[in-house]
Amino acid sequence: MTYKEEFIRFMVENDVLCFGDFTLKSGRKAPYFINAGKYRTGSQIARLGEYYAACYHAHGVDAQTLVGPAYKGIPLAVATSIALAQNYGTDVNFCFDRKEVKDHGEGGMFVGKSLEDGERVAIIEDVMTSGKALREILPKLKAAADVKVEAMIISVDRMEKGLESKHSAVHEAFEEFGVKVYSIVTIEDIIAAIEQGVIGGKEYLQAMKDYRAQYGARD
Image (cartoon, rainbow, N blue to C red; front, side, top):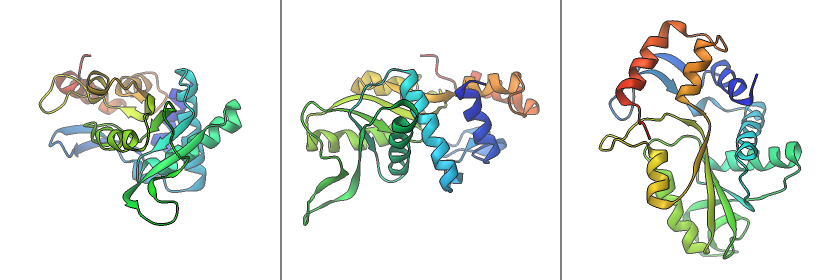
């Protein structure tokens, strides 16, 4: 299997990717749900880091530092940096932001690598629905140093148009900020995995396709 297929099976095995009838925060009725909160063990986060590292490597991302937006992005950035070192011989820095600026000790907004002007960074996040996390972290990064954001890596691209837009959050991230967003898998990868028998869920296949037809962005 490809790393994408392995990741989709990994999500299903750990109850992160579920099929059924779900009401999303947007109010949309979806036949699938992704709950990253189900990742809670050392072995899970270690494997998750390997999939992020595989995506990073596959897309040729070249960053000096991985940034994990608090809070979900923190373990993801750390796990990815470990996997890059162990699996690809790529030793990168990592850092993450505080919710409040520390005014004592070493101070500052970030913990870990101190950012410098011209530094190439990659943001590591779980999913992108509206682009809120990106909009929140970018001003913090620019306030710390004049860094260059090489990419943002997420686990799943739902490829959905926004509530008030025909474009996906991934597309808008590039249009608005010039940030390329790469995902380990997309909703189309998940549909293909069902069709090819990589995972179960054929009873939800038509509902998945209908949902994609109704809400999918076509950027």
